[in-house]
Length: 139
Image 1 (cartoon, one colour):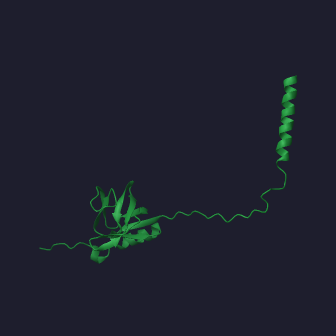
Image 2 (cartoon, rainbow, N blue to C red; image 1 turned 90 degrees about the vertical axis):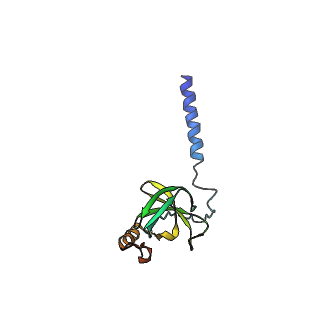
Image 3 (spheres, one colour; image 1 turned 60 degrees about the vertical axis):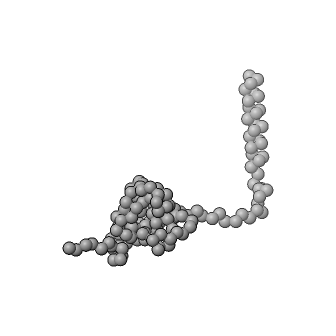
């Protein structure tokens, strides 16, 4: 019976120590902490605002081709380049986008950016700006 008695004594000692450490007084009672900022994640969407655009593997004009997108396609913006660039006389950032499970980079001057999917859908229904529609030859 000695092992059982030693076990009960150990349980008693541990219980006393556990309750002694749980006194109502905290040594941090007077410590004031600043409020914790809330992390918010906002998803942005882009609508292709040109007849056809190339989705690139990297944010470079001559990078490999991932796919092509038509006017009105709605893409999810993943991130953007930190620097602006001028391409064909237009200055903007590159945007990494996701479209139908594929990721790639598009130049920002060919996108309209929106802070909600509903706004992007409404813009896609409206169609591209008239100056963005390529001219057709009538013969």
